[in-house]
Amino acid sequence: MSDPVQKHLSDNESISHKDPMVDQPIYETQEVSLQDFVVREHKIYRVKPSKKSPEVELEYEIGELVWIRECRQNVEDQEVKLVIDYWYHGKKQTIEIDRSQLLLNDFQKLVSKGLDVATHKARDVLRFLDYQEKAFAPVIDSHTGHGWALHNGKLVFKHYEIIGEDSVTSTYQGKLALKPAGTLEEWIQIVKELIIGLAPLEFAVALGFSAPVVALVSRYINSEVLFVHFYGESSLGKTTAAVVAVSPFGKPTKSTEGLIQTWNGTDNNIFDQIAGNQGIPLVLDEASIKEKYDFTNFIYQMADGIEKGRLTKDLRQRERRSWSGTFISNAEHSLQKKSNQNSGLKVRLPEFGNKVWTKSSQHSKELKRRLQGNYGYAGIEFVKYLQTLDIEHILSSWRKWSERCYESMDYKDSFSERIADKLAPILVTAELVNEVFPFQLDLDGILAFVIENEQESAEDREIGERGYNYFQQKVIQHRSHFEGEFFLQKALHCYGTLKKKNNKYEVAILKEIFHQWMNEGGFTNYDVVLQSFKKKGYLDNEKGKYTRTRQVLESKENVGEEVKVTISENRSKQFVYVITIPEDLFVEKEEGTPPSTTKRNARKILGKKAEVTAARFLNHE
Image 1: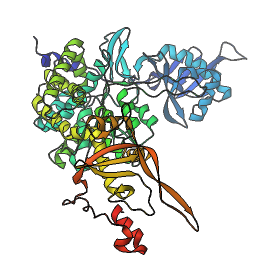
Image 2: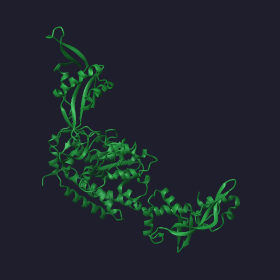
Image 3: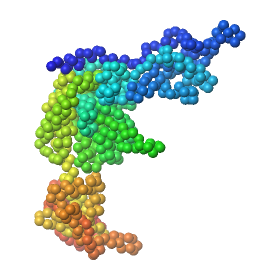
Image 4: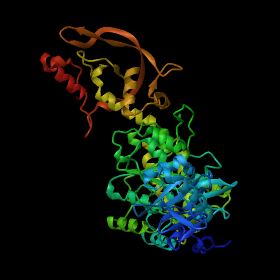
């Protein structure tokens, strides 16, 4: 087998990334005669026979020069745009317009941009441009999409140029800065000097390169977008890790055209940034800017890879845009903590929290400085190598690494297989990167890094256990609302009963109170939580239901000078959830809650006037 490094790097010099602009327009070097027009010194003249002497030709000035420098035809939709040079008050300007704007009415509107196309001149200028376009304006093929796409029935990858289609020379004219800078050799040297040997940064390299791998595989099997979040203090180097990840494919800066975009905008604004991306890694920087924000819907939609259905102004279904590949977010906080507690969400968003990504601030600065001058070439070479591989080879490697990830987990739950499959493409990619470039990522080190992180978050992922822990905290906080040894009989609502039973406490809680608590904690899917309680033996329920019926004290309103809600002596049958909690839950620990009190009336402890104080003491308010 031939050396893949030699095969894919030896012809690097043949890669052309010149701008498609012509070197110097002809009007800058000589006078131009075109039919009955003449261009001289940045002005257009029309040549007409003299009325008195037809054999004599006279020049009449039309106005400042308007010149089509080039025509850009989009290979995706065949739309043509024109790059136009024009002069306004003696100063050269450039504008890009749709070719459809050469219609008279639309063309005259360009006068607002400074084009010398007033009503009495516009027809002459348009006729001149018709001649000039055919004679001097080069036609440049262009594209605005990026990533994998079908072109003429062939799968290609759209980067600064189209990779995989020799018959098309097209240049990227989209929103992102994909034009390579520096050299591939210098980028490789940066990896060797500043990244190799540091597992977190080697992981970042593999994560960035995984974008075209994940996007490619999604064309053959149903797979989710790989959406990963880094969080922690600003000094840990998480933004530097993001720079490392995207540098193989484009400009690794936070700017309007850089591959590091911002969270600052509505969800629709953000999806506008990523829609149509089929394999270029992109970063959403500083989610911390969204302080009071629930990320739940965003995470689900991001992982699904398709935007929600929306209607146009005329109430027609808008085309739903899609994306695939790898996307990275970072912030000082966890996105999961600012979302609901559904376990499915935690599977869709692997988080790497409080990791130390770089050796020092100086190391971080050096990495960013050098990568911001050398980027874009490595991604091209990697995609070229992917195009030589059979898809089954990649899928087989994916299955291999998924099994290995799963086997490496000491703690496993019902989500572990899905998590392993989510992590697998990062290891698949790391292995492929080693086949392309003259450096070696430490596969075992990257595996250890991702598995250690996964195991740290595994216990927090189980929604039932988290819901149960949250429920216990709420019972401790509100135990004086339950009829039992902690109950206050005045000025309180009754939430149910709290009784000792078989070395445990049995909590019979009203349905609406339980739902309210779960909502407050972000556990919006009650059935999933209750099903977990039932499976673990925490829930005592009637057959086919999650509830039982219990006699619960009613609340009543006494209307006088003030409306006061108190507990009545009446009981009524209510639907309740009967949940068992540990007997020692109310026993004081080193940093726990106060011990339980002997069952006594609050007024006898502190006196009638101090009843409110007693309530606050027993209720921890």
